[in-house]
Amino acid sequence: MVHLSSIATALAAGLLPQLANAAGLNTAATAKGLDYFGTATDNPELTDNTYMTQLKNTDDFGQLTPGNSMKWDATEPSQNSFSFEKGDAIADLAEANGQKLRCHNLVWYQQLPSWVSGGSWTNETLTEALKNHITKVVTHYKGKCYAWDVVNEALNDDGSYRENVFYQHIGEAYIPIAFEAAAAADSDAKLYYNDYSIEYGGDKANAAEKIVKLVQSYGAKIDGVGLQGHFTVGQTPSKKDLASTLKSYTALGVEVAYTEMDVRMETPSSSDKLSQQSTDYASLVGACAETEGCVGITIWDWTDKYSWVPDTFSGYGDACPWDENYKKKQAYNGILNALGGSSSARKSRKMRRNMITRGN
Ligand SMILES: *[C@@H]1O[C@H](CO)[C@@H](O)[C@H](O)[C@H]1NC(C)=O
Image (cartoon, rainbow, N blue to C red):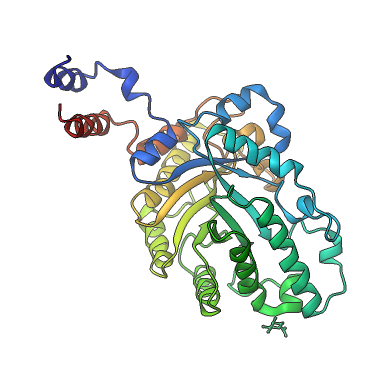
């Protein structure tokens, strides 16, 4: 039998490096009390073997989000004709790996098939089409989704409602109606409102709080607010400000999660930018880790190779914790530190606790 004192001595001397290095992002997140650290992925990437090896690494990723294949244009390309193969591929992957699945998304103004966005609707006919879409998709994935992003990006940056097809014909009631339909189809999935630029105070964050209250006022179930967390190097709020905004949502009785985190920079990168990026990731991750009711963090893909950023923000990129050659960037360690994962003090605390539990 190994003596406790000799292990403690070895730990103190840093003689167990393989143990200290074993904790990846998800391992550290769950040790810190979060439910998961995860990543978005997308179907075209699933044929890349190097990518797949890391995607399946549950030490880093305990959760997956399908980037595109559960959206309306993918799941109901023509009215009442459903197609689930691509969404299933990612749901099956998560299940096979033992990873949680955040399902994304049910109602959004983008990636809508033209039969929805260009249809001639009345309040009644569009409400029926909306409910039918939600009922069929949520029922198909029933039991597989830890969470659903039920309504995505309903707000303009000034906090007013986007004049999307749903708002035009149904008014703000489309939001609670969507949550009611999702809850009826899968009462176990956590139902989220998801948006960006609601991570810090201001008109849009206030409007997101109003959406939570609106859904609650209809007597419908809403479980969470998803804060996308798309930021730019050097323009990411402080951990304190981020945490204070997270608390403004949890005060309403819902959980929160960062659902699409990345921190982009103007390319080319530099060591200064990579260092600031690490600090910015740490602010975001640290805010979640210290906020009761923040359940998890999802990055919007883990490698720069498959990041959406360069195609969307001209001149920007390098937004992920791994570079395009799958090498960990400084940001990886920034995240790990913010989760308490790389400190040997933390590991030894955990080991001590385990030994005490075992009654050594
Ligand atoms: C559409 O109908 C719903 C009831 O299903 C109602 O709550 C909502 O206010 C109506 N919207 C408009 C714009 O009349």
